[in-house]
Image (cartoon, rainbow, N blue to C red; front, side):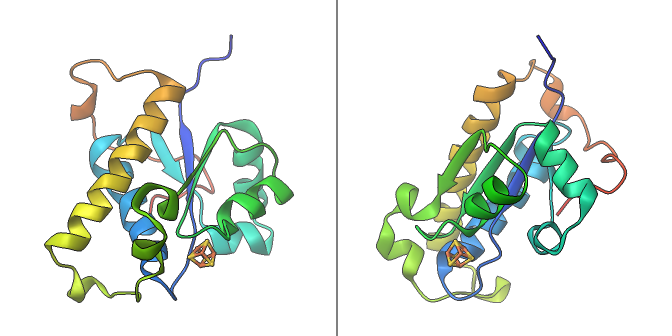
Length: 155
Ligand code: SF4
């Protein structure tokens, strides 16, 4: 069986509702804090614009999409342009449609309630990574993020 070394996380780039911002910040938290070294991200706009490395990555490695709302732009784009999505999460499924559809926010407007929501989505995303790769060994969470493969970038 092929060993899974990295999981690609593709978050939507929604700016018009809170769900988009929550999905992006939750993805960043997983990449930087909960599962560094096990996850890489793919820039959705570049992916849509035809970035070959991004499409190659999503064809080759397991991918998790995390979308702000039920329109599921990241999921639909990935399935259309690259292939099968291993797991698809949606903020509106996790937090409810009302939370996802709330007005968008800037980093300066972050408050404890929004942070709790980001944390909830980040936990779901972390569990999805572990379902694909297995739980990390006890000390693995101490690893720093590795340099991503050429053409890949961390958020
Ligand atoms: S999934 Fe929803 S929040 Fe994300 S980009 Fe699409 S419409 Fe916007």
